[in-house]
Length: 343
Ligand code: CP3
Image 1 (cartoon, rainbow, N blue to C red):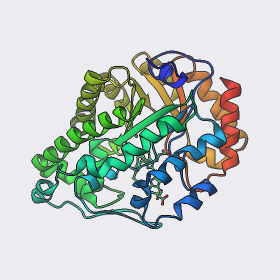
Image 2 (tube, rainbow, N blue to C red):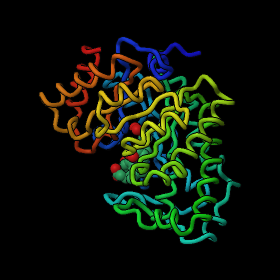
Image 3 (tube, helix red, strand yellow):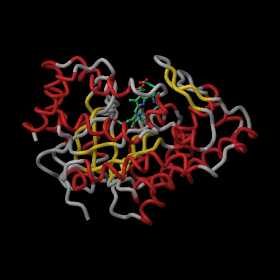
Image 4 (cartoon, helix red, strand yellow):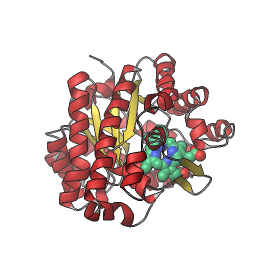
């Protein structure tokens, strides 16, 4: 089993120093990312060019020496690999040809699934040799519910009326879609592990919009099935679940999915998490991404408070959600310094 610092923490050990990485640690806040990003017209083309994605993954490590590298890709490569039309419009976010009915679900195909994702696998194979020896390689996927919201809404959403209406009124269609996504997501993650991923994170960014019963059905249940499948084949690879916005249901999520670690959004109270969740799973999080953008004394204070409280147990420092585009890179440098001093 790996003795890398972050793997030990995710497997339940209290470590010093506290390991860290940051969601969206690669991306537009870095000038060197914007420079290589300009080489591809579409964002998906960029994601499917291993020469560029390897470099994008490495860029933040050179500056800040995080304990983990995360595969540079996107959660929406999975709908693309199932044959859905997916595009990204500059400044507007993702645009998909929305699924409207059961025929849309039936038309999805697994035939070219792994072939279409080959560039992600190749990126991981190259990263194994390109990252520093003590750095762990993180693979990821969107959780079925979060990916389904994009497939049904056709992009980002505020109210999620279409996706939630499927849950309430087209339940059988949503069930078919979620079952398919659960199956292929597990396959995708197993392939990522085979290609060198040492840690897996499952991003359920929109778990928090679901009421309790729906949350169990569409977030917890698929995550549990994915965890079981990965565990049975790769018992040593830690799995981080991120049911963003789940509130008090974080507790149920941790107990019922069996994840090794759970990533906390910034609204989760620290002492509650330490008492209720940390006995069952390693914790990751949860600095407000706007506090990182703002910087200064407030950021430093909150960073130390998080490490004081959550660092008493198994803990990986991270943000509550991804780095924002207008975050000054110097703030990230300062954050990395404080984490190493405090831990
Ligand atoms: O963390 C990392 O450094 C790895 C890269 C990564 C990206 N997307 C790159 C990206 C990861 C892990 C993701 C996951 C992702 N993608 C999620 C889950 C995490 C979360 O943020 O909740 C979601 C919901 C998506 C879907 C997505 N991709 C949206 C809504 C957008 C548009 C928003 C925006 O910032 O423009 C993207 C595009 C995207 N994914 C960019 C990057 C760097 C920006 C596109 C560009 O550089 O042109």
